[in-house]
Length: 136
Image (cartoon, rainbow, N blue to C red; front, side, top):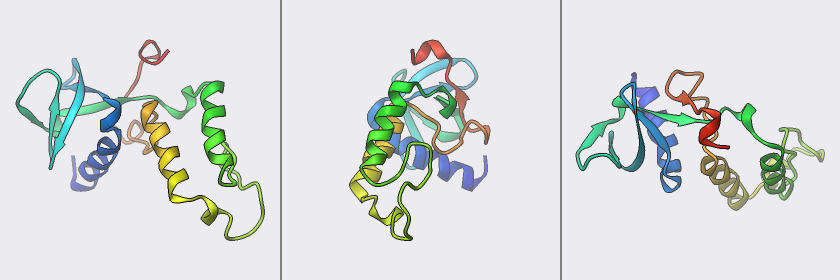
């Protein structure tokens, strides 16, 4: 794992930490991430730390979003003039700027709480795809 991938993974996992993300330790054991300290992570299976390179988060592809989740996400985005499908609903260059920091925070935390792969970690080989039975 190169430095860029490690930094991306650490940033992503840091945002997910309050939502107890599932990670795979090695190739088999599924654990819950409980803490991060530099490039070391703590899991619910041991008091020792593990190197960030020894885990991969288990995330949901965006394509698994349910209609209920689309509506909930849409409610957050509609409050700042964006549609849930990434289209700008109103014209004007400042439309994106109307999305306040609070709305951005709410949106990203909603996505993290549902374990969506917002940073394309699955495509980069830095995460595993979550089996359907884990989120249904």
